[in-house]
Image (cartoon, rainbow, N blue to C red; front, side):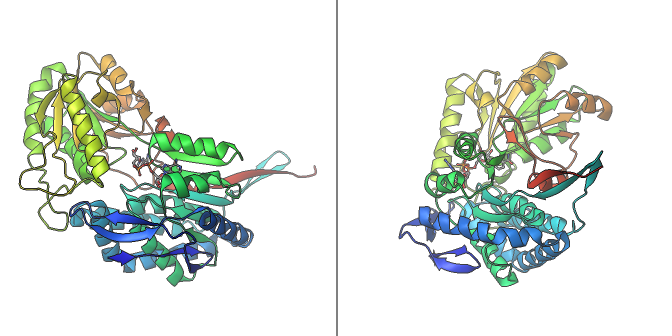
Length: 473
Ligand code: NAD
């Protein structure tokens, strides 16, 4: 078992002040694989003070110097990419081959992207004013477990490039990859206090950090429930808050679309990472006339998503992250049945041949109606809801009829028509005919999916203040 008893604060590994520890469980074996510190208020305070003390100097280095540091971090992560993938598979449960492709390769590519943005931030003249952009200050980064390192790098890399200093609190479910990142930071020799790592629960370490008066900004990714609480805590000192929250994304299938392509892409989106993806297409909205064809293809497709041990080569889906998450998803499945949706495949039982691990079968519901709980709430498990529409206006209304607005997809034989529909959807990111994920394009939500944007240049803007300097005429 891995025992971590130190936090990374002010450029050093220091013993956590509190004695309490948090277990990290492998969701495939249900065994405790590590213990990490449950940081207390004193640890949080030490980390914020270190970040504050480091801010002035770091904020005054040139963008090119900071970019050069990020390049070192990218190289450090690259050198440990296999270890990162294996660690994330052990703590999260995503099959190793996908962890290698997504969980470690994606954040490394993102770190490299920000390392490549080495030019100074553009300044602008408006009349007699010079408009300049400066770092916000000390940033608290609070991150979830589903794409853990990706979500960390999507905050830490642009924050550091902007000239901010950082206190990171990763999810208590998957903290081990963040400890590896801190090792990379230490090995690179980043100036003391620029990056600090604390660990622990949301209720304790997370709330202390979000409420700390020494923090200027909170960059949060997680559930809408916790995002609301973080915003309340931030309000006391009017911190800037960037929120990346939940989703209930809809894929809209128009009657001239290539059905096989739609089903393949939608199942992948909905089931990958066992459905624990914030922008997963969890609602498939189809013309009434095509319902039978769609459901037949979807059920056949679901059977190809083999569930099993994430450390082995065969499985496409591993377990969910925790017993709590498994229970939550089972309750949603039971609710779907209770409210009258048609269970087409999957269900609450463990997949065949598995008697332990927090697994859930890929599950599809047909005849789902917009008011059902499974059509409205984020399940965060491998559960697809298929809804029917009679005309395209109704389809758009159905897609938009949700508290969330993170992502959507439109499928049509006519790209132009699909684009017109995409413009009508109230979501921060819309795929047209399978347009692939773009790491440089802004990512973020409308409505209760959050505010602010991550990734690319838009992601950097979040960490910059704008100053007007009025010059004499
Ligand atoms: P969560 O909200 O439980 O936890 C996220 C992080 O917030 C963790 O580090 C947790 O410790 C911390 N936290 C929890 N309560 C807190 C509080 N009261 N104060 C301060 N910090 C607190 O979410 P999760 O279960 O880890 O992640 C799943 C959720 O994240 C889903 O809703 C998913 O849609 C969302 N998510 C969104 C995006 C996005 O980019 N929009 C990406 C990934 C995940």
